[in-house]
Amino acid sequence: MLLTSGRVKRKNATPTQKTNQTKASVVDQLEEALQARDFSKATTMLEFYKTTNQPVGDLSINPWLAYSAFHMNDVGKALDVYKELLSLENCDPMHHIHMGCCHFVNGSYKEAEECALKGPNCSLQTRLMFHIAQKLYDEDKLLIYHQKLKDTVEDQLSLAAVHYYRGHFQEAIDVYKRILLETREYVALNVYVAMCYYKMDYYDVSLEVLNVYLQTHSNSATAINLKACNHYRLYNGKAAEGELRVLIDLQRSTYNVENDIVKHNLVVFRNGDDALQALLPLLNVVPEARLNLVIYQLRHDQFEEAYELIKDLEPVSSPEYILKGVVNALIGQKLESEEHLKLTREYFNLIGTAQSECDTIPGRQCMASYFFLHRDFPNVLLYLRSIKPYFLNDDTFLYLYGIACAGTGNFAEAEESLTAVRSEKVKAEFSYTSWLMRSHIMNKHAKRAWDIYLKMETSAESFNILQPMANDCYKVCAFYYAAKAFDVLERLDNAPEYIEGKKGACIGVFQQVFANQEPVDSLFDVVKMLESSVQQHASEPQIAQQFESILKVIKDWLKESKVRRK
Image (cartoon, rainbow, N blue to C red):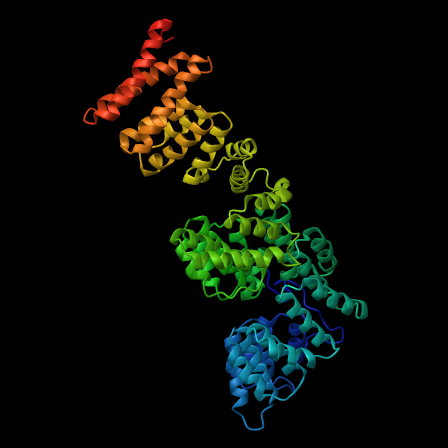
């Protein structure tokens, strides 16, 4: 959602006029455009004078054309101009480094390195090589060029940028604040500080710092976008989109990259609307587009597509590790792949134990997920309870919290949490149904579990849920519903354990009716079940005889007691 860029110049803004002349010279107009960061105007002017072979004062057109094209994000044009410059005799060798900067922006880091090394040893080369090492994850070279950095503003800003990209946000803030103390006019550094606080989830602090810059630069695309992102985190997508409208109004005079960010962020603020159409073209333009497209695909159960999109991503930031962990968990469970699940556990444990994340909500979610995959439910609860106040109405949290409670034997809290789920998608999951039924049964609410079963369509899932239900009911002495469950199981699968379970449950109902712990009507239902078993096992005399014996005892008692169905 964030990308740095320059300020936007309003198209109808009144240009600064020189007081001592009515018409500014070409050089003055060019300087004015560059000072205002209106690189589109500067590029247009320079291209015109270049194609018409007209001079621009004493300036060399091509270097400034490449500079302007680079800063308006037309890297292709900048590369063409630098190639033209380097084809000339006695060209400035610094253009090799400038060309390396273009390749770096394009993501062509190897080409950027080759160009940079052709240029002279200088601070710009050091900074470029420092950033290339970071992008290529070359820790040895990163250390080498880190040691070459000097105590200049430019070098220190590069250091802060690498801290930022490595997730060391507090270290980046320290650098920016030190520079601000020494040089107050670098007010734009407040935006960089605000971005760090945003990444640290201090959204209110980020807004406070950001407003320092917006007071004097109200048309900054980066600042407006960051403000919208803070509003999204603090409030909702509608509030964020309202802030982004300011930037949308400036869109006609902004840079292409900023237009792309507007498209990307509108998708995020609108909860994924038009994600496929808007995000696919931005995968190599906006870094977070890939992650948000993966999130969209996960929400629409497109797990394989999400995996293909993220499998080659080398995670660096916490969101990348978390998202890659989630995707591998889903694929691992679907394919029963221990390899994918092992990766998931490693990613979750890495983030959950990281010093920068261990006390954050995502960090604790990661640790809960890590222990969940190990079925260590006491530790799952330890982490989930610490963040429960933030997810009281979150269906996914309620679902997982309920399972964890049930896994530790706390069925009362499990039943409360699971019944609070409202999402039909969650309720349709087999595991949700089975855990909810078990919680009902363990809390002496076996009828609720049976009612859930009756609403299920006849399928393999409904059969698979009957066996644990029958056993759980038997375990808690809910013999009537155990008998009903074993009765269905016996008719579907004439297995010995179902026959024995049904006999035991029927005898249990009889004992409870005799002790006035169960309504007598339940015993009449048991009589029908036993009669059904006698008929079903007519070809198996020994089994039929066992059911007949139980049936005779119950019928004799009913006759002697003179009880009737109510």
